Length: 261
Image (cartoon, rainbow, N blue to C red; front, side):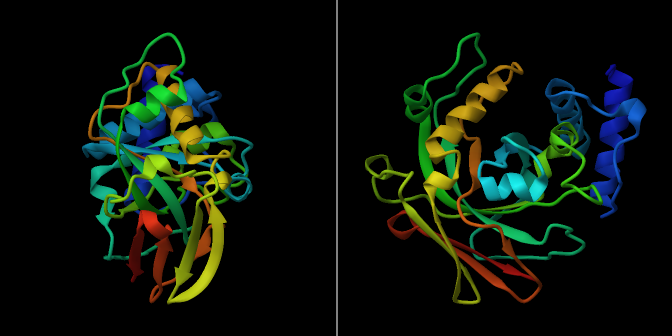
């Protein structure tokens, strides 16, 4: 893709996002055919938003998440500051197509991880983390049938990013916990809706965090101090509707909730 095609593709996606519209697919003449082109479109979508980069999301880190959007591996997307809420917020669902909530481990970066030629190890990535937070993501897509368009078009569409709800900083020593086996429950209107654990996130949310550091590294992008990375759902995505209150309980690591309007 040349720059003109990238700009055209991003403009279509951003217009659809802002107008709550849907497209079947990007036009063939400006459709990304690989991950590199797709991330270039995604970066242009973020530029068009004129919003500060709050951090990053990882889509499709679980089998359920991959099945939900029709891919076989994880995708990285940008969290835009204007789409971030704090725990307990009221969120207007509007024309959201996916209508699901996802319980996720989120990490705030303390020490930058700049792009470099060699992979980051998990130890290096974890050493760069400042805080851990429980989180809820409310994803969405600008495609009529998002499970059929493929990974490249989904990445271009910001990896199905929409709303992000950040919970409070975990107060316990989370580094002493085995996040892979750590239990997480999702509650809808005070009724248990789903149970899972960190192993549903690429085997361990720490593995997912390392994955995105290295995915971005290949694009010449680093993780900066203050950015938050949410690592993907560790429970089955929960169907939501106006009137629901969704709470994700991470036990000792804290809780996060959102009211859907």
